[in-house]
Amino acid sequence: MTTTSRRLMLRPVKTLKYLGTAIATTTLLISSTGSAVKATLEDSPKTIVDEVWQIVHNEFVDREFNEIDWLEKRQELLEGNYANQEQAYRAIRESLKELGDPYTRFLDPKKFEELTSQTSGELSGIGIRLTIEEETSQITVVEPLADSPADEAGIKPGDKIVSINGKPTSLMSLEQASEEIRGEVGTDVSLKIARSGNSTFDVTLTRSQIELPSVNYSISKEGQTNVGYIRLDEFSSHAAEQMQEAIEDLSQENVSGFVLDLRGNPGGLLFSSVEIARMWLEEGAIVSTKDSKGGDQKFFANGKALTDLPLVILVDRYSASASEILAGALKENNRATIVGTRTYGKGTVQSVHSLSDGSGLAVTIAQYYPPSGMDINFKGIAPDIEVDLTSEQQLAFNVNPALFATPADPQFAKAIQILKNISASQVGQPSNSITIR
Image (cartoon, rainbow, N blue to C red; front, side, top):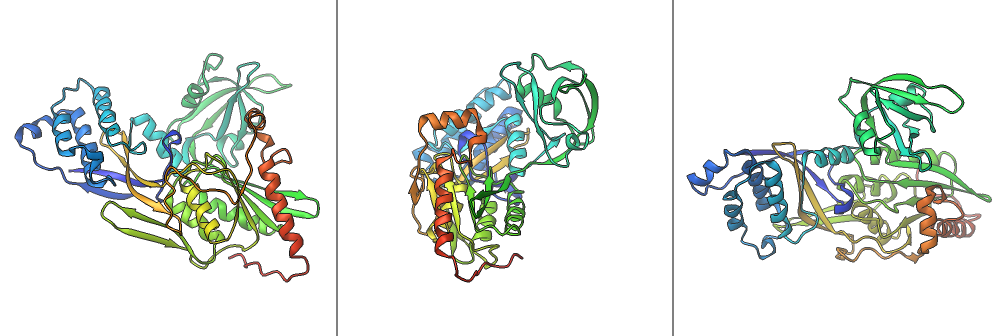
């Protein structure tokens, strides 16, 4: 038998992201196909091939397997000769393509490790965001994460990393530098830092488990109106607790409404999206899922919303999966006004399994539907008010992301206008905001 760890996932292929806060253990049954096939499984590459086949056989949402004879496919795969793991991986990927589902996919050990860190919202490191300066090609600190080893050591934005563990960074790519900095919790990494106006200095940091921020928030002062701005980058396992903190902190500042920015958010954990929807929605349906066996699971608000202040949600064509669950639930329950462009259109759920050699498999196990029951797969969710960016604006934002959520951002400007209009219409009316719990 093969034991896998499993996570439910909501995310398009190009961004590697998922769904499901708990890890369940699944035991997969290997069907008997004769002693010859059993003997081939002693070959390690074929073990991985058959692990993948078994998971797809048991869980894939399309029980017709895209009109492929999946039993025959197993025999074909196990009769193949694989000199190494890479050849087995290639055969796995080719067989998965035949299923016609872009979200059922194989991840080599490195990609699976990246995915696990991204989904958990944690990684082992020193807590710095890096970039490469265009003019000098130097590895440069964008910012240290709060309370991280880098933050505690006094690393500052703009610091140049000259070397990592004695290795010069002058010829390193950003990925190579990041790889060099990462390591096991409790181990040390030595950096040589160059700071403007000072000579270089050395610092040794001990790696720790870092919680990655999924939520950033601030107050936007628009005349006499204070608006709480929250940007949610991904639905990681820590996103809900970070969202709760954002709503509570901003509510203490007497904001008159909120802008929730889901632009570019590729999705993440299903239960994270449900938990966050419940923070905004006092009652009503959130989402339902339907699996290959016809099982239907429904999620509802639980009467524990943190606020009922006006809400505008910003979306674009890259807002996908869990983002669409949240936007769809709040739109259809008339809880929020959606501004931007039509969303990505991913209406399926994946489970993520770790395999015995450290690689992983994401397999589509269900479809999900907003409260209306509408199928959004490949269709997306239409905004209430469509505001697109011109190619010139998009280019400007790509060059300078600091322009987002400023007066130069037409989607954000429309959100502010909506909130101002609501605020003006409510002048003199008694407040009925829900008490923060």
